[in-house]
Image 1 (cartoon, rainbow, N blue to C red):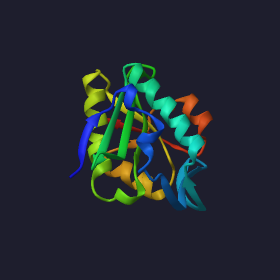
Image 2 (cartoon, helix red, strand yellow):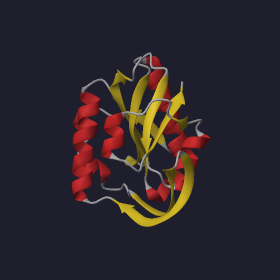
Image 3 (cartoon, rainbow, N blue to C red):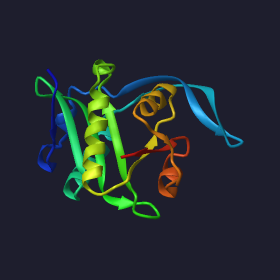
Image 4 (cartoon, rainbow, N blue to C red):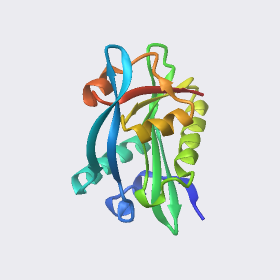
Length: 176
């Protein structure tokens, strides 16, 4: 049975991810061309190594220490999914909270864990007086299908920092 809970900064360490498989085989991605979204073939494998996990640990610790949310899904006390929401309101009218990450271990996808994590992120952001979640989302067709199923749409306002950092990401929002 999956158990969900908020993580504190002290428990966010590299060993937390020892049973987590961040691997995604991508074949097609969404790309914006001439103002229209189209699907393009762009095959690659997105897989994290030790460097990516070390960076993730630093980022998640920072989020947890600065008023944000780091929330995990556990099976037999092993992390199988997580979501993070940054603690600051952003956007021209302070309407957004940034959903900075959401991942489900490859061996646990398709079981509703992502949905539960996303709903926890929405609840947290709403409790912080945000009007919308902002998501700079991987452009893979499967990833975008998940976000669309959760009610996300193209962001009305793009965050230039996210766009510069990940120019192929789709900039989304979800009204709370």
